[in-house]
Length: 189
Length: 189
DNA sequence: CGTCGATGTTGACAATGCCCACATGCCTCC
DNA sequence: GGAGGCATGTGGGCATTGTCAACATCGACG
Image (cartoon, rainbow over all chains, first blue to last red; front, side, top):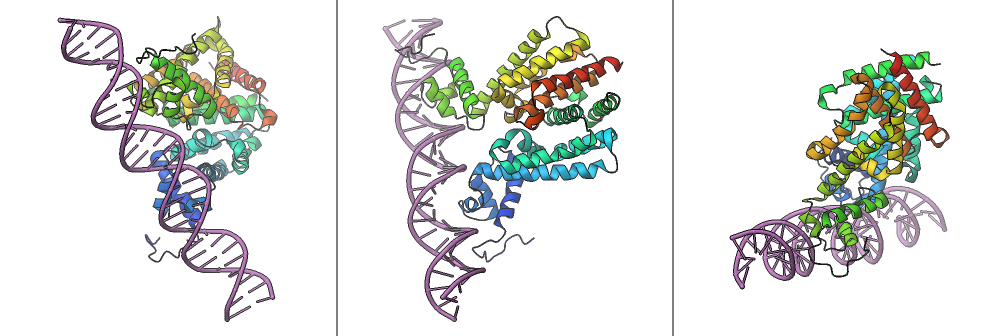
């Protein structure tokens, strides 16, 4: 809470966490491309080299941010799913998913598009995979689950950068689309 | 065709096009994030500042690349659609779409994820919008078209970065998912 | 034939990612 | 309880980058 702990005890103690928070703020402001390690360090009030004690590389920082994002997404999905099970859960899951993407556009973009390759960061890959679990549980059939994942992810991305021209944008339509898919999923064994 | 016009006539003549081609090669190799204007210039055999006579900014170069990508995508879709019309065109369209994304992963990523914001580059925005046209014609109902767009785009992205774990990846599944969606689209009024 | 504008070139500057050597201070082990 | 070790943080430095400014070159047009 203290805006400036006067006597920086040289060893910060929570630098890693502070760096991540500062980085996320800058991510929100500038996007992943313009996020600079040195500016993160400045924001955290440490030397330009301090981050290297916690992240071997700029990309590692971004990967950590994205990993955290996937954990939060998974939590949001579980929270949004509520009591629903099976195909009926698709709509609330989709809604929670889209809300997450809409609330954290820069982070979402980092997680799926802008960010480091998952193959280079095992923890990231695993977190990303884990976020898929709620959907896989709701729709036991693989094809249906993948389709739903793709549909919702595609909607999120198209909405995010206004790819869908403004006249037909909006969460309402998105939800209708998901609803329709859910209905079909139910009847298509 | 000439690999090196010996006497570079100072005024290159086709620099813009050459720069774009060099840039796309580097894009393929390194991704948009690591693409450096100076390296593009080097690859084109001109000074590090020559590109600025054609692109006011690095981002502008990327936007031009992405714009071209959308034009090519639109062409690929029209070519892939063949004679099919209406909902029946969905499967061939989806196939063409996925093939494009699979053949040009870096470019695809630039177009949708990595690249400049469409709102900052009108030509880009328009090309992106135009690429949507074939789909909109095939599925006259807005919701269905948006859903299909999202579904296919989502599949492309998930496939691209192996988000769908390897065990269920592959174009075959993707096509099945699209086929199912197409079937549902046909029966949903 | 001269000049003018588009296109390229050279030079410079600040910022950045990352490397190296050094400083600091807590923790452990005799 | 003192000495050494190790994680953490600092400062300086280097190559690279995007962009700006000044100058060079050349074809077109009077």
